[in-house]
Length: 449
Image (cartoon, rainbow, N blue to C red):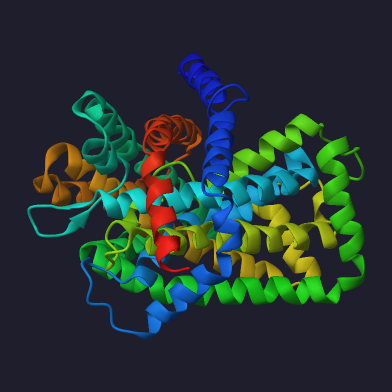
């Protein structure tokens, strides 16, 4: 088993290494940003305006959920352990400079996420139940010729299995570990409660998932962001030095100090890119599955709403986590992962901040399980038809419990490999269909100029 796991670890390192997925993700993001003439950066205020106006009026366009609910469903899957554990891991291994490269990949990732949503709405279709379905498997099938159809099946196959790893068992395990560490609640009890709560929500499909996400995501994000902002404001005098530390470490590496091991420039780039992508999922192809269900007849509008997900997830929430860790000096403590973030918040809020991290981690992970259940379900139904949905949900609920009570080293590796292999077909499709994205965007802004 050890040899098998070691071989899988090598494969995962190759897929997510410096010669394959990370440079391809970066290249696609840069290419789409240039092709869109930096539209995601220039039109960010307009995207916020479109989202806000859409919330205030009843939307009678085609779709199953509101554009806002589609964004919340996407954020339910992306705002999770990556914002708490991933940021701390990036700093631990890559140094403070990793945060700079996390910002860079997020800025270009906005164009990627925008493009995914544009294609998802453009090429979506209705299934046998009359539900709107879309995502990479559909824009590959409907946007490219039949010679590429195998690639749609490949995306759906790996997406179906990746969901059980990074979107389910890893999340439930994180919650169970946090509940035991903080409140001494047994792993099996957390697993049972999580499974029950998940079953109540996902049995109602995307509409119920969207409804729950649209309530929980703003609630938990506001609490977490508010707590982080308090710590940042308390330590406002250190902000300039922390910003300089991030920038200098990004280009010069970080020397070891305290409990910190130090990091090279390349490790800063690698960890910043990898953890940023893990957090916002731009390019993986998961987010457009949610946006395809939005009530809209305008792909560009939904694309602009989608790109806000990357901005909120990485530029705002991940950045605040990073500043709290750096301002409080927790990154020099020798702690890593959730314990580093918990120490930072506890230090910044005089012992009480750790509970906010625990609360945030639990809710973030729970909503991630909900969002990814929909992604995996849609991938499975693409391959096997809607008859598979009930069975998939049943196994999803069981996996939530199993994930809470077992060790997950092998599951983590499988999840990384499956995530990488589902991203590759999506990235190829984005490049091949980029003329469609550019033309639709140009026509939209010509009409609205």
